[in-house]
Length: 309
Image 1 (cartoon, rainbow, N blue to C red):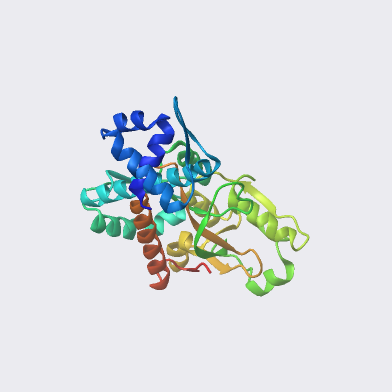
Image 2 (cartoon, rainbow, N blue to C red):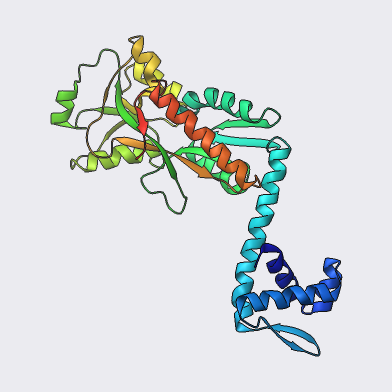
């Protein structure tokens, strides 16, 4: 039994007769009949019951047809992948990421993708999670890099890295990790997005584990740059990955320390969209993204990140 035998079988099942299958496939009826008979002999089962009107599937034929369709789809995907490889890759690659991830990864990721697919058009999008998810659902994005939310719903997140969260403070703040360990979130004014945002939910969950409620001094749905500027001006503290504030911390414009305990890391994940990109190219893009992310963490270019286990 081979894929060609299964293709003959599926063609007869779809057309309802040997002669119709031969006509549609551009073959002679004797060839189709012989291949179907050979398949039945190999399997030791009758696949069709024959009548003057044509053929009907037997129960065994019904069972085999589902597998034949799967093999046909797999072969079509393989042909598409080979064609894509011969053409030098897909026509376009569309990748979206949340801001901190984009800041760290888009540069090295472009270099890796360009080296692998020199003729492919590359498009990057930086946006908040809800906008990226909408693009994934609509097919406007092939692959996204997102933080896995506390409540992921039906979206399939494939873990890549774990990223430590930090409490980011104004430069004159006197709060220490030891003091925070004792008092928790009490007395810590926060600049955070509204409740639908992943960071806000994570902070609420962390505070709830200590039977506390976070003190929101200011709700801010602006960019990370604006949030950091508000913290610098003493409007409150915020919670972010180290990579988002590293330059300000190094320059002494902000202070920060790593949050400790359960739920203080975010999972950077890959999410696939409704893409027409060939499976082989998707696997290759997945590999390239993974290698770029893991290399950035290993070389210290993604501070606070470690491989997801």
